[in-house]
Image 1 (cartoon, rainbow, N blue to C red):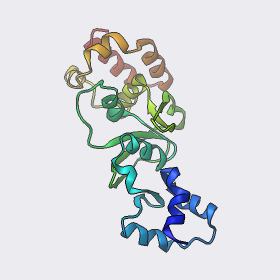
Image 2 (cartoon, helix red, strand yellow; image 1 turned 90 degrees about the vertical axis):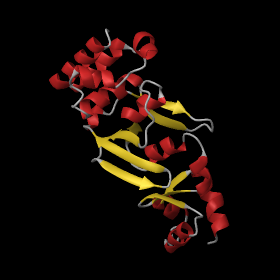
Image 3 (cartoon, rainbow, N blue to C red; image 1 turned 120 degrees about the horizontal axis):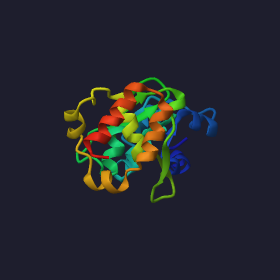
Image 4 (cartoon, one colour; image 1 turned 30 degrees about the vertical axis):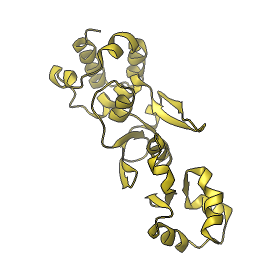
Length: 205
């Protein structure tokens, strides 16, 4: 098989794994992946997962990679909050929530961190559209806050809460307080409930 044939078939997938390659070509020589990676024709995202270099410079595709290379997962925590403009800090890694074990991967597209929760905590995310018709699985703003306070218990004082520097307009006009409390009640954690109560108090909600 030549690379042009391979690229024509798999380029539209954006992110593909070796199982998809074998489903198409059962006799595919895996050494081709090693050679094409070393030549820079394809990019290795993690063991068994690849993309093409053209996608690395396009906006939103790192989020798409995050969704695809560790399933099931959705983008949340600081990454989602920064993407929504709720916190001011830029993020240096993409953080996601998964029902699999905690994991992290580093590749030419960035650093991808996955924090583990129980399977029944995998809720509160939406499919955000991309320009090409694909979608990104993202926590809602309220679920990103829940995930943050559940997975990072050091947010337990007025100082830590205020240092998050949530956007004033979001807090006053856009935060769905009822949805936040509903999500919190589904977790059934007294410690989380206390942190949510502290958050609401700090921001006068």
